[in-house]
Image 1 (tube, rainbow, N blue to C red):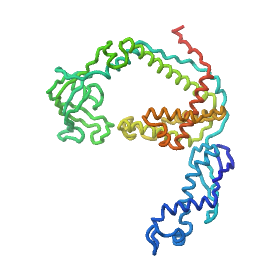
Image 2 (tube, rainbow, N blue to C red):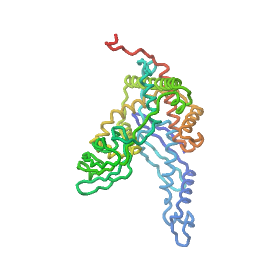
Image 3 (tube, rainbow, N blue to C red):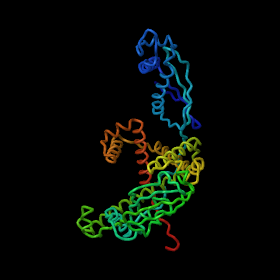
Length: 436
């Protein structure tokens, strides 16, 4: 296949893909091999009829459409790579005359990323961000470590917020027990908000062996529509009350949870680690500020199709995040008293901002000639392999060439942002009036 650029203007590219007669013939042979079992020809066992007989029976173009589709699917991405084009919509394809024994040409017209001149991107002035680690931050981190190593023990007293109760319950609406409202040996942390509003608070003050009728009203936007807005009662039997017992913050604790011998050493290590995270977060904030400044300094006419595509992408991202939490997009929209059209209209400004920054950075990458070496890609694959406990070669195999292209582009963008940060002018933040 030979790709030739015809024109590129007004955010639209036109190019041709020329296929030889030999390429067309090879594609038809492949389709014949893959589909010959689908043809039943008198005098031949299924799948044994020669290609010429099938073509004589069904017409010489019987394999044309699928062969052309296969050729297009493979050649189109190759042509985009060869011509360095970034399409933002589906292509329009016009085919020359198709005939047996002849090559053909496909003329492609497709909307592409807009080209523009980027200005004022080096030496951007941004306020220096300094995130300091306080004693309170260190204490919170140690408290979190305490909680992760806490013991949950049974207690002979009334339950309070923060306790865990083990209970059986059965839910009724009126006299009818409803599906999904029954459990035995359920663990529930009071105050966790895991159950519907009002349920957990009514178990405060109960003890092991207590029976308690918990009366609640289901939210109007509850996921089970047959229960939404209805009054219900849960007949509960408390089996056990447990409390969380935290270990003492001392040298023994440090030895149990870390490689350090003393609490002081653990505190120092915690401070170093939090300081490193704080510095990384500060650098990220400054880099984002640099990109924002560059975007403010440059006007870009963004095709509506690019914004719409980004909105769809953001919708898919939210849907995936919700699925990890056991929710659906429809449930989320119900909870937020919204609908898909309203949500997508709401995220449109963010989608436009994301597209604009991506276009601007892509243009600067070209201007600056930012290159990515094979070693850069290997380093990225090694990090991904370590993250997923997988050999880097296996990661490369799973990803394939197209995903590797995205990896390369991500690395390229990061290298550019690092360069912009290195050349930025960091200025002290303006003092508030009360600090003067």
